[in-house]
Length: 455
Image (cartoon, rainbow, N blue to C red):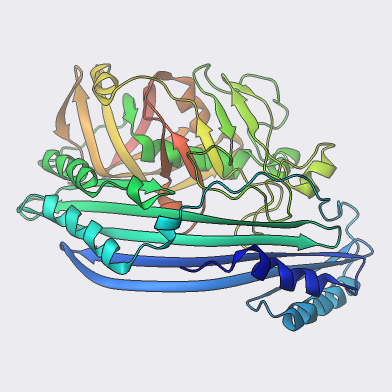
């Protein structure tokens, strides 16, 4: 993909904002090119490329805000959108909590763009899938997705903010199933760099799980020791992010942090930060309002330290924006913690499993929802590799189990932590969110299983 670049993206924004018919205004542009190759039964069946540009235009008149979205970067079209947004603002009630558009501040240089990844060809994506399929045993078949994503973000406003950053993402996943019995295994890699994907390793991990996933038994409901692999932990963190880590949710009493800042909310082994500028994750260095992203300590050794903020929630709570405003068409206002890093440890997979007397190994979750956001409670089912552990060894495959538990209670019982790696939750990997996590596998003392799928 050829980037438009800072000049070509910011120039029309600056031109449109001259003499804007409003008290103040800003424009955020997001361009995304996604090249996706899908395969099933160890054969590619679809290749698709989308290249979309979205602009969100805000005009403010006497603290009333008008918003127009569009797809054009022509200065005349942007100018027309600003005029329409100003008209909407004049027809709207003033927002007494409006904080004003962002002031210019120093912004870190972009660090999540890799030229070779942006230049990845369809042939290269097909070759990575071919390597997965070739590494899968003959009695198994593979399905999944290879994806290369290139984005460009730009923000400009009437106070002089002008920010631009590109980013790249490479993703490869494999679901391996048996031809002779009911069983499946799953593995994936996610990286800023296409050379950070390892097809043969992905295939080996998924095939190993599939080989173990046979002759399933049902697990009786109850509390069990558990090993959560990285994808499962990322799902738990998604629940915490969406229910409790934004300033607005804290303010409105919907967060587990409400009234508990500085207090213990979970165990001492749990530390969580939002750190978009960690070199191991994928992010742009500013938010959709043009505010630089800050590193935010969310939970420190079990103590709630505070949420992330956008400009509106920061003003309402007497704080400063931490650079966590998000696309309002996808996320609630008030701050979105989308680049989480959970502290890890040195435990190997063998040590995590070996520490379990009787419990379960969970590869990943499926369709997790939250019935009680204030307690960060989550419920859903496991998928693609759930196993019984007895005396430190995997002994049987289990039918998928349903769980209902509080993320806070779960993290209160951490016994061991493994090393971090970059991962996404189930929703984000299927295009319905954007939370990236530097996350470790964990062994916990108690996970609550409430039911089991039919055999």
